[in-house]
Image 1 (tube, rainbow, N blue to C red):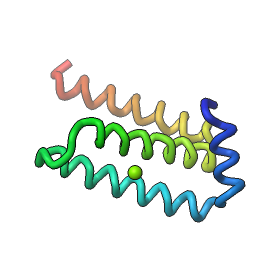
Image 2 (image 1 turned 135 degrees about the vertical axis):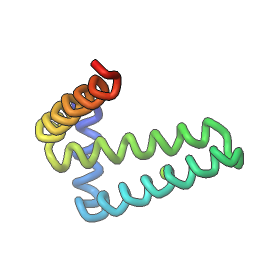
Image 3 (image 1 turned 180 degrees about the vertical axis):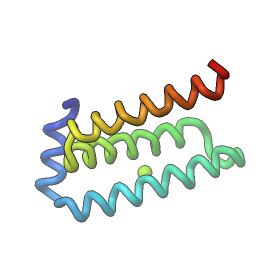
Length: 91
Ligand SMILES: [Mg+2]
């Protein structure tokens, strides 16, 4: 898994509870950034920076909860999305 050594190190240093809290905080910052971007209060780079924060936190949570299990859930959801897209396209 990409960045696995960093994820392991952060979890060893700060622990699971702190990283869960940090993930929530970073998601909230992304939410605020997207709202501010839509109102033209911040630029694209500020959104990209928040996306990077959330991407890293998702990586840590995925490492924490199980990369294989998350990948399986992603595949299941992609199948459902494919069915939805085909049904909405009238196929
Ligand atoms: Mg952030």
